Figure (cartoon, rainbow, N blue to C red):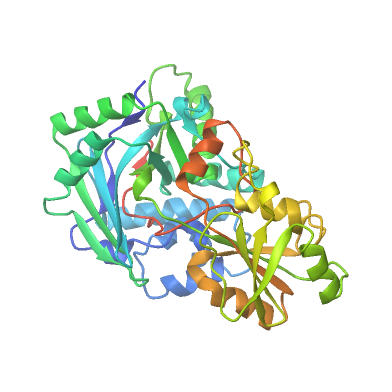
Length: 412
């Protein structure tokens, strides 16, 4: 089976993209989605967050929600806002945010290669979120939320995508957050064959974002094959993905805020921190510029923390991540948080919100202390995945985000 495959994409009709595309389903809560979709009957939020069209007290995991998603998808298709290509295609998807540009390929990615870890993971999944995606995919008979993947250095692929993106785009929309989404269709047989062959030659692809969606796609494939008694290649043997060159992808820092000092007075806390870190007050907010350094905001004062040099070298690809170092030498021993997945004393703030976002959480009294981190690199991510390991929770924050509704993958 091929690592990737073209498919008959479902996408916005010409000049209707601005009415359709929407933020990813998992970056808005139900109330935010309801507000964003108000007065926008064709917004993809009616498919990705269908509880917005039901009473406000509706359980977002109820059967009615998934049925409403299917109903809304059919409604938007029937109205002509979404059209489907007549032959399998690849698509070029370009994102531009604040001058940063990345150009990738929309394709079906092989479930079989996900199952054998050729499409590599770096996070655990949560059953409730995985179940939600399974039920949504099954109800709408489509994958509507793309998985964000990265491919290793492949100049030949970069060149094909660059050439394809010279033509007239099928979609070009600047969303209300200022991010530009542009899509081109690749429908010529030679380019499709060249891309398929180039990806088949790759040793691996890497999941950047979308672990629950890819795990759900694997479960759907098993379920559909059992239901249909089929053994050949079927549409559900692939999952919707957008695959960018790793060197173009941008990971932001993923920072931490903690509610209290674990019973310590400020002087006791600072003394405990100094057991493993050099502590230096700063007159300005601290945005780390190299591994092993951290910012800390406490009592309206910023500090620069530098991990003791003897604790820095490490061959383990997980242990050498700054998120791991901060957890091992400060958050767990000093603040008493050993399971950040379940401990409600800790929260996580994407670097896109800036250091002011950390100050706000602490100055409001909601949190006691904040930590800014140096961003995880793509090489770190790939090293962890290649080692068949998983990162600590909230290790990476990718920007810009893919939009829902740009291309969907129907399972028929």
